[in-house]
Length: 249
Ligand SMILES: Nc1ncnc2c1ncn2[C@@H]1O[C@H](COP(=O)(O)OP(=O)(O)OC[C@H]2O[C@@H]([n+]3cccc(C(=O)O)c3)[C@H](O)[C@@H]2O)[C@@H](O)[C@H]1O
Ligand SMILES: Nc1ncnc2c1ncn2[C@@H]1O[C@H](COP(=O)(O)OP(=O)(O)OP(=O)(O)O)[C@@H](O)[C@H]1O
Ligand SMILES: [Mg+2]
Image 1 (spheres, protein in one colour):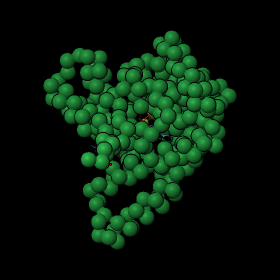
Image 2 (cartoon, rainbow, N blue to C red; image 1 turned 30 degrees about the horizontal axis):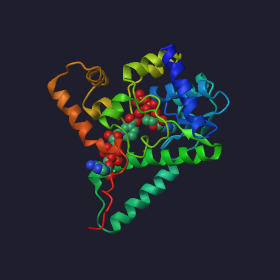
Image 3 (spheres, rainbow, N blue to C red; image 1 turned 30 degrees about the vertical axis):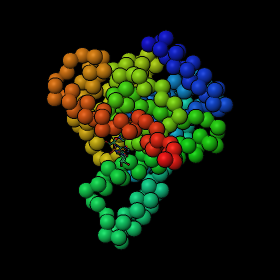
Image 4 (cartoon, rainbow, N blue to C red; image 1 turned 135 degrees about the horizontal axis):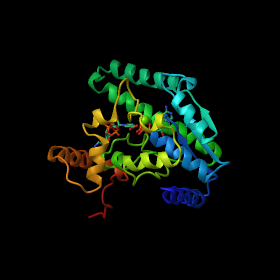
């Protein structure tokens, strides 16, 4: 793991240099994926890295796990409360669509969740612009394979150092980086609504997805579900589709 940490640290340095950028930042949720990325960017850019706490429906001071991560990693941070931006944007969308008689309540929970992820993305880019930093994402191999991220939300980033790592490898790297057990053993959650759990929403455990990504045989029903998720979300792993060049015939 130490070698892999070194490899990712150097890779981050090379990519930032190639971009002509001065450093890197990451959104900090208090979960394990962003904790690992925090430690990596701090190693890669000791004086030019930033953690960004972006609470929605809570205060910066109440993001205790996220605050512990930045403190333990020795990472400089900024907290930007997005609650009022989110509420204003969401309420305005709802009001205008209700006026048209088109508001779809069944879709509203997921729509609001994805709006939160995209507001965070826009904020991270605005902060990155200020410092001439790149935005580092936290998506790992199971999330990438299943498309378990918001397109252009948490998926909208410049670099994805953990993209080839199974969740078990992220946990192993977290241990090697001295991330606290409380963060390592926390139930994975996007925290986009009360009680949300990655594994419940996906209908699959990370252990099962990891086993599949290791090339092992898994329950056929789980395998089918995984393949369906992968196919359905292919568009998220591609640049937007355009037509073939029109040749005028
Ligand atoms: N075939 C296709 N070709 C091109 N575009 C296509 C498409 N099918 C849908 N789309 C577009 O994609 C949209 C659906 O994708 P998207 O907007 O991402 O939304 P969707 O995949 O429905 O939802 C995002 C999922 O990611 C989870 N998530 C989000 C954020 C963070 C985390 C976390 O782990 O922290 C997890 C969230 O809980 C939810 O399950 C559609 O509204 C449509 O605009
Ligand atoms: N409150 C928040 N403030 C800043 N960034 C956030 C916040 N919530 C989510 N994010 C960003 O969105 C990413 C995706 O969340 P995700 O839940 O997949 O990762 P995680 O919380 O780090 O780990 P886990 O998947 O184990 O919960 C986070 O890693 C983080 O970069
Ligand atoms: Mg999380």
